[in-house]
Amino acid sequence: MSWSVHSNPKRRQRCCAIGKCCKSEPSDWTVHDAYMTLRAALSNAVREEILPRNVAANIKIPVPRKRKVKPWSVDEARTFLESARTREDPMYPAYVLVLVLGLRLGEALGLRSGCAGRTSTSIRRR
Figure 1: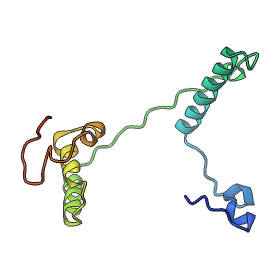
Figure 2 (figure 1 turned 180 degrees about the vertical axis):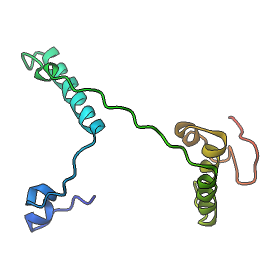
Figure 3 (figure 1 turned 135 degrees about the vertical axis):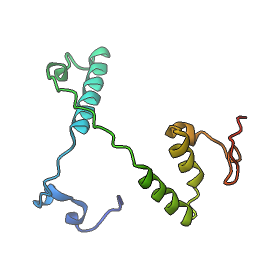
């Protein structure tokens, strides 16, 4: 998103601010995370004696259900890898490691250049 300043204030405003509601609402997790952040900030303010009490502590918001993750089928993964390879995506080796070996994102991103190559069948630990 560009945060450039426009001379026309209506170009700066989005959606409901200009009376054209897109009917978009934040997800349950977004609401929950915002509540937890506000509650933590107000708790710190009470602890530092800036506020007399934390009004957010009186509100209970249910924890949203976790979404079920639908893993890709073998054909979907193969299609993705073939597309990445034909586009010569520089992240192709990481995609292979994530999909074939089951590496987590942090593990794949933590690999240094040279630990695994396009033609290598092993990963070196330094």
